[in-house]
Image (cartoon, rainbow, N blue to C red; front, side):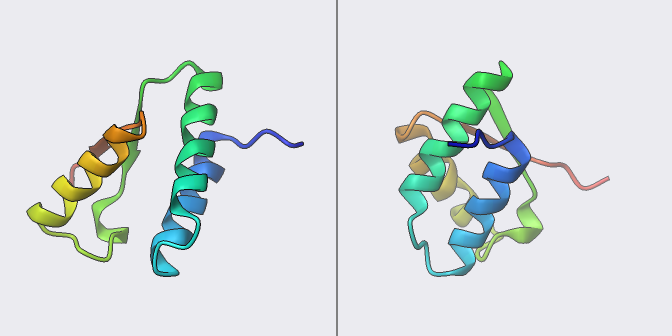
Length: 78
């Protein structure tokens, strides 16, 4: 089985969210594994790629991912 990079795993999460959260838990698990292998503790998410890019949507995402062992931070607009 091929090991995913953090970027590839995050891209799969974005795709899953676009497809009405299809297999989202599976992709979160793969992201968690990729983060662990890369020695990282959190993933930086681009808020503009979210379906609900508002405070409530971001907090819901952070909570859902945290329950599955992945810490989410959002990229700041520069």
